[in-house]
Length: 246
Image 1 (cartoon, rainbow, N blue to C red):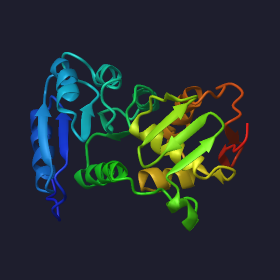
Image 2 (spheres, rainbow, N blue to C red):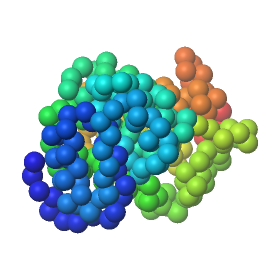
Image 3 (spheres, helix red, strand yellow):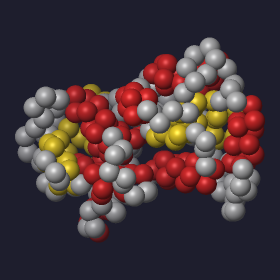
C-alpha cells in the first residue's frame, strides 16, 4: 500500500474488517496520515464497539463473520450518526443500493486504492467541520445561511439537525448534507452532477445511484409523499428541485 504523503488531523477511525492483512495495511496507511485507528475483525462485536466508542468514521466490510456489514449498519444507525464507508468485494449495484438504504454514506469496491479511500474519508469528515456546501450554487449568499425554514420544516446547518412540526428528524450524516444542499438552494434545480460533486468531491460517472437512494429515504422523513413528492421534485433529465412553498 502506498505511503500517505502528509500528516492529517487526529480523527478516530474504526476499521471493521476480517481480512487481517488488509485491515493492518489500511490501519498503517491512515495512521501515517495522523489518524487514530482501531480495528475490529468480528462482526458481532462491532455493533457494541461502534455504539460505545462513537468513532468519527467507520470503514465497514460487507462480508464479515458473526454479523455482515449490512446488518451492522442497520443495527448501529439508531445510535451512531457518523459517516460509514462500506467496502465490498462485489461491484453489484444491488449491494451498493442496499448498503445505502441501510444507512451507509459511501461505498468502495475492493481492492481498495488507499489514496481513493483517504480522499473519500476526507470528503466525509470535512462535512463534520460544517464547511458550507456553496460549490453547487455559485452564490456567495448561500455561505451565510445557517438555518432555513419552509412551513413546518426547519433545517439548521450549524446544529446539523432538522425538525418537522417541531419533532427532530432522524437523518444520517449523508442524508443531512443532501437535505441541506437542496433546501439551501430552494427554487433552483440542481443536477445530479452538481449534487454529486458538492457532496462527494469527485466527478459524477453517470451511473452512481446513491443520490437517488438518499432522496427516496429523505422524502418520507420530511413529510413528502414518495409516490407524488411535492417538496423534493424530480425534474426529468435535469435533476432535483426543492420547492419553497408547498
